[in-house]
Amino acid sequence: MTATDAAIAGATRGRGSLFGSLFVQVVAALVLGILIGVVAPEMGQALKFFSDAFLKLISMVVAPIVFCVVVHGIASAGDLRKVGRVGVKALVYFEGMTTIALAFGLVLALIFGPGHGMNIDVSKLDPKVLTSFADNAHKLQGGGLSGFILNIIPSTAFDAFARNDVLQVLFFAVIFGVSLALVGEPAKPVVTFIDTTAKVLFRAMGLIVRVAPLGVLGAIGFTVGKYGIGSLQQLLTLVVLFYLSVALFVVIALGTVMRLAGLSLFKFLRYLKEELMIVLATASSDAVLPQIMRKLEAMGVKQEVVGLVIPTGYSFNLDAFSIYLTLAVVFIAQATNTPLSIPDLLLVLGVSLITSKGAHGVPGSAIVILAATLSAVPAIPAIGLVLVLSIDWFVGIARAVGNLIGNCVATVVVAAWENDLDHAKAVAVLDRGSSDEVEYQGV
Image (cartoon, rainbow, N blue to C red; front, side, top):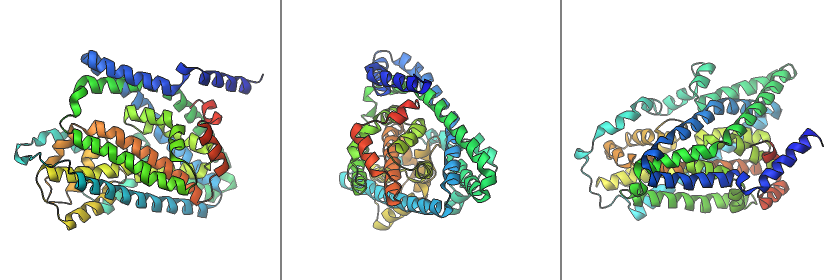
């Protein structure tokens, strides 16, 4: 038996064991974290160390992985016109789905009115609780569209990596990859080196993800220990409505485009169940970026499409985030008894199309972006943001899960649009519910 055969056999044995499944381990950690948070709240809060450590481990390798994958995808594509075509199709899809998501949140907020009856007096709200987000506000405010574009361009390539700014790393990766493609044959050793580096980084991420149950345990234990099971009571209506909105959007909007691509959304979600559970518990989609890319490739999506669409989508295709943006704005208006005219609502939609872009990875990004959006709608008191601070982490879970599903669906749809999807292979993998290729690689 060769070393490769032995490795595959070992992976198969691991899959055959119930407790060897990462999915089962994550669920067990989720339940245990809730129990600890309820029974021993102080101990639950102390477990936050595991969550923080896990997210730092993930953050450590995300930027270089994005760089290597995007550069290799462009440089190995051969035809730069194809790269441009895929990019344009992806952006068209992103803008279309973002617009639908923004309108979705707006309509549901107007229909259900989650803020009606709160009758909040804005003069009694404490603005000091927003100061912790001030350091990040400069990333999203004060420049409009031109400021947003300038923020994409890093001061230096090294600065983008040092600050772990994925959007700037992506920008540099596109330029570097195009340059390698233009140089051609003499640059092949560099392309090979980057591909090898990407494989090493994927293996490193595979090792890190094995400790995901500890990260889940820490995140859930801390949240329940600090806020308690009843911590959602104050704004339960908004939370429930947002979760329902994301679920409906996924089933209706994303389910429709998946059907147009000839695939089943529910089988697709089953295929991604381990990654979705990790995101559900940690409220961070960064934790599963490499696994998602590998799984999409394993189900028949070409590598260059995955390498371009997924990293770009992390900043430009925030479907669930967009739903929350308009939902929260209308909620704040309703809670503070602020009437909104049709021009106000259209202004919210227009501004949100810009402010919802490029905020991935910014701490407290939801609050900062809400502030940026409200700054363009003077009728709504910005201090109303205080109302949603207490639930931001909880809605962040659905935001992260919804954004991840949206990006994965976008990649499949763009690949199908570009005829870069092996449909027969995708159907076979989704019917089976797993891919031996991905699991063998340790992810």
